[in-house]
Image (cartoon, rainbow, N blue to C red):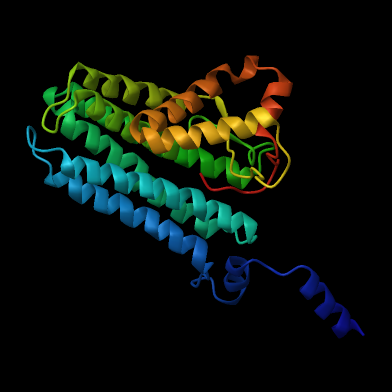
Length: 286
């Protein structure tokens, strides 16, 4: 009878793969395949983006930069779906969170910083390096703080980011780069609007390590009922993306950045309409 009871308890409370292997052999770690495969795609896109940034020469055609931007946006998509799939399948793990942060550091830290340096910041021998390095270091601090808070299971951590998330920071940088290239209207030179990028890098560096809270939107349930206005807004954004991708994408990420800044003064009713279905608790990937 005692043996049967022990078996029942084990079935009701199974250990995570990392915990099971730690008990059997501390040197071995088992991982969930699909979420970490997507994270590997994120990391690979970041590396490929760097190779294309290296191919760009100042004053030459911007095609290598355009390809690098597409790769960073692809890394953003991989990063979004790896966390969502892990949560839906209940396959979140400490390994996945650490692997995700390492991939984010390359794809959303190193790649965007080097991209802006190659097209704008290279003109300033010292200041340029400082701005790019500040963005990279603040991004690393942001990821480290995220992992510490995840391990502590801070209340509300599953529904809010503390500080601007680095994937969104990278997406904002590259979408604004596309916007500046669109404004320039030709392939070899950026106009005066290029000075937006260094200022944006400094602003994002500060916001990433700030205490400003941003909704995650990662647990949004699209199957639930919404207001007609919300539906119309989604359709309008989709049409604008199809019509003018560069401008609309930059506008979306700028709106997200500004939303976090004004969020404390927005009425609870309006916030619920925007952030409905955000769930508290649970580990998430940045």
